[in-house]
Each structure stands twice: as C-alpha cells, then as structure tokens.
Amino acid sequence: MSNDTTPGRQATAAPDASDSLSADAPLAIELRGISKAFGPVQANKDISIRVRRGTIHGIIGENGAGKSTLMSILYGFYKADAGEILIGGKPTQIPDSQAAIRAGIGMVFQHFKLVQNFTVLENVILGAEDGALLRPSLAKARKELLHLAREYELNVDPDEVIENLSVGHQQRVEILKALYRQADILILDEPTGVLTPAEADHLFRILANLRREGKTIILITHKLREVMEITDTVSVMRRGEMTATVRTADTNPQALAELMVGRKVLLRVDKKPARPGRTVVEVEDLHVRDRFGVERLKGVSLQVRAGEILSIAGVAGNGQSELLEVLGGIRDATGRIVLNGRELPLVGRPADARSRREAGIAHVSEDRQHTGLIMDFAAWENIAFGYHHDPAYQRNALLMDNAAILREAQAKMERFDVRPPDAKLAAKNFSGGNQQKIVLAREIERNPDLLLVGQPTRGVDIGAIEFIHQQIVALRDAGKAILLVSVELDEIMSLSDRIAVMFDGRIMGERLPDQTDERELGLLMAGVTGKPDGEAA
Image (cartoon, rainbow, N blue to C red):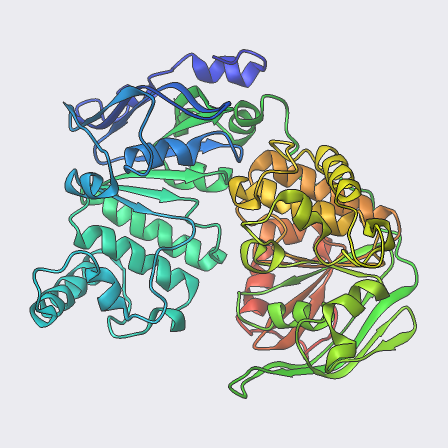
C-alpha cells in the first residue's frame, strides 16, 4: 500500500470502502489474489477487489497500470497465473469470453468490435443466433432491441449500417450487444476516449439508468471528472498493484491523481502568457470536398503565429480533421496556404505529406493507431517513419543505417518517458498513452516550424496528459506555431492562447480563453452565434 503522499494515506485508511456502500447489497464480483505476468513484465500483482451489485465501480490508473489486463482476465481474454474469481459469491472459472458471457458479464472495449459493413441488428445477433435460420433470430432481436432502447435510452436504428453511425452510436450498439446477451455485469474500457462531451454526458445517463435497473458496472478510465461524476466507489491501480479502494464521495480529484501517479500532479496547464511573433502559417478560403462530393471545409481562413497555440474546438465531424489533413499533405483542397511566406501546393504530389515535412510541418494525427503508427512494426521503426529519407538515417544509397535509427529512437523514448523504454517492442504492445508518446517524440523532436496536433491526449492517463501538455507548451515557448484540435473543452480552455470554433465546415468565431467559457464555446460548436462568422471576440 502506498504511503508516499498524504492523500494516499488518507485514502488507504478505507481499503474496503465498497463494503460501506450499499452494505446490504450482495457482491456481484470478487477477485482474490489475481496475478498475471507477460514474460518479465508483471502486469497484475496479487490484486483483490470486491464490487457490490447495482453499483458503478471505477478502476483508474496510468496507462500500463494493469487495469485492462485485470478486466481481460475477468472477461476470459487472459488466464490469471494465480488467484480466484467469484461471481455472485460463487467461485467461477472463466477460460474464455463465452464463459464470461454465460456468467452474465459483458465488455465494451475502447476500440469497438463491430463489423463495419453489417447493420446494427446483424452485429447484435452475431454469435448469438438461435439457429441456422436467421430470420427468426433477426425478428426476436429487433423486438428486444426496441425494448432495450426504450428502457435505457439506447436509441439507434437497427437497420443502419455500422460504418454510417457516429462513434457515440457505435458505442450504444456495443452496449446493446452485451444487454441482448443478458449481461448483468458490464465492463467499459475507457468508454469516453472517443466521445464528444455531449456523447459522454449521454453515456452517463445510460449508465445511471442501468444502475437503477440493478446492473453492475465497472468503468475503466483515467478521467477524474468522470470518476467523480458517475461512480459510487473507485479503485486505484499503479504499476500492476491495487493502491486503494475508496468511496467516491470521500475523495477528490487531486487525491486520486496522487494515488495514480505516486506524486503530486498539476491538474491544470502551467504556462506563461504567450509572446506571439510573426505569422508562420496563413490559411485563406480553404475548401474541401470528400469522395462523395460533400463539402467538408467551406471557406476556412485562419492564421497561426510563432510562439502561440491556436486551438480548434468543435464536435467531431465538423471539418477539423479535414483541416489538419490538408495542412499535413494528406488531402487535396482549393484555396491558399502560405507557410513562412511561401505558398504551398494544395493538389497532387507536390502537396504530399513528405513535402509538408520538408517545409517544416510536423503532424500528430488524430488516430494514432490507423494513421500515426504501424502497429505491427517496432517502436524504433515507427519513430523513423516519415523521416526515413533523412541523410542521418542512410548508410549508403541503398541501405538505411538501422543501428543509428535504433540509437536515436531509444534516446527519444527515454526523453519522452515511454514505458517500457524498449525500442524493439512492437507498437501494438504499448499502452495507448505510450503509443501517443512515441508519435509525439517522432514529431516534436524534429523541431518543426508548425506542429499540427489532433486529439493530443485522447485515451491518455493523467500523468501522461501532464507530460504531453508540457511538451506542447515548451515547443510554443521555443517560438514554434501550434495548431491543436481537441474535443476536450477543458483541454482547449487551459492550453490555448486563442480558440477558433468550427461548425459545419466553417469557423464560427474566435475567442480568447480568458474572455469566454465552456457555455459560449458550446453554443458556437452548435452553430449558434451572435456575431458574424469568423469575427473575433
């Protein structure tokens, strides 16, 4: 048990806080002495936890703390090296996910397990068909889905194809899948990592409804605001061990953060006032159409100066991604982009990502797993990607100097506190936060004139968030221009020097952080403004 901080000592005074909450409610889950190692890495060390029926129990910790491993053992994805699982007070063997489903456990993963070209209805019954004939199964599922949708606010069109749904609605489908299989215990792994604030609020209403109906929910997260808002009890993990379990009402974000990290954590961005200089990039009348001919950017104009962070706020899908892609050389456009006084091409090969990098633009993409990294490749290879033409990486005209790349990658990983600091490990074997650090190390250490950052802390724990924010601010203070896109309004408010809000492919307005609030920004994000488009506050 940790005793390196005062809040830690206070919290651990009630290691079985779950017993004092709904003390008359029986235990839904009890894990006793769970341990799991992957080679030399001890992911879980003698973990015991008890969760009462009809409660929302949060499990928090840094990336790599062992949260997901523990829940994967409960769901049958991994087999524990030691320990015992009790469901409803009875010892239960869970060798695979089918056994977990039979035990009444459902799990919603951070990265959804849906067939994109199937309908909602087809995804829900997949693996749970009543027989060889699908028509009776579909009819039964349709009736049950309508019932579940009304009962839990999980409204979604059963005939819609998954790839046409928003991320928030896809998550509802995952919850419906679990409930259709009669899950009484629902595990959600970082459920708001890909949701907008409005979608997250709706998810919390759904979870509250499920709790009222007697369902037991385990919420794996690193977002302290969510923990305080929705959970009844919270367990804190650090480096594979359980450091405390407390009643949520008896703790606070600062105490939880210190238990997670083992030190005091700054929960706000510590930065000096910006000292903006010359204009680094100027965007004029930018227009983009997607492959279906739909206009995604509708005359966007903005400027970013040296030594400042301009943040783009908005609900996902309103043109922010397309803006980053055009600037990063991934998507064609019409209009005008001027970088350091030189106009950049917007169409064809001269506008590709390599040319943008050579011009001084670095790009941290919004989706690290699909466009930021090649997951099956090693960390050292990923750190070289996009910059592999650098003469420092070339042994001769035909061969790359892999030893030099490996040495540089190892040094960058150490500077960016990537855990474990093993450059030969495949990217897929790092936690989400450490994958993000690999991307940031690759891009920031290239000393760009303009850094494009999409969702810099999505799915990242509190300790890594603090570190990432520090690196972005340090780059700003070094006189670089930062264009940042985030759906996290608290991140926008604390990190930005200026804020532009996008809605439906347009800049709705520009604000200074100390002259606005989340309510005004939320209205602009919904397209409501009392000022002409693009007019600054």
